Image (tube, rainbow, N blue to C red; front, top):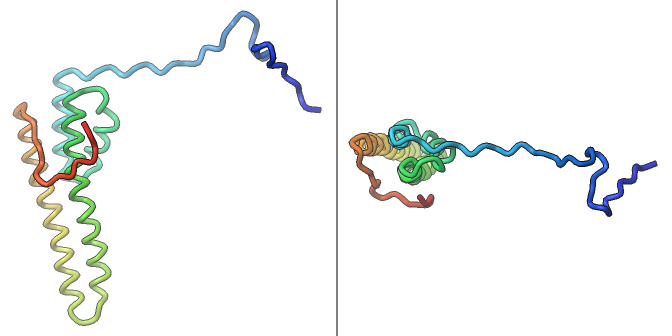
Length: 150
C-alpha cells in the first residue's frame, strides 16, 4: 500500500518540527588578486602554443573571478577557435583528397601543409600576445572572429 504524505498544510512530515532544511550554499569564489589576474591572462595567451584548451579552461574556470583574465582569455579563445576550425577542416579534406588517384596525394599534402602553417601562425601570434600581456598591455588578435564576449 503506498504511503500517503499530507502536503496540504505546507509541511513535510519527514522533517522534525521547528527546524527548516539547511541546504549547503556554495561559497562564492574569491576574486583574483591583481598579480593572479595578470598571470592567468598571460597563461590564456601563452597556452595558445598548444591549442585552444588552455584558453578555454582559463575562461570557464577563472573568467568570472578577474576582469583582465576574462577579457584576455576571451580574446585568446576567440582567436584559437578561429584558427582551429579551418585547421581541422583542412586536415579532414587532406585525408579525403589524398585517396584520389593521380595527383590527390599532392593536393592532400598541400592541404596538410596549409593546416600546419595555420597552427604555426597560431603559436607565433600566441607568443606575441603573451609578451604583450606580460608587459602589462593588452592584445587583440588580427582576423579573429569574436564569438565569445568579454
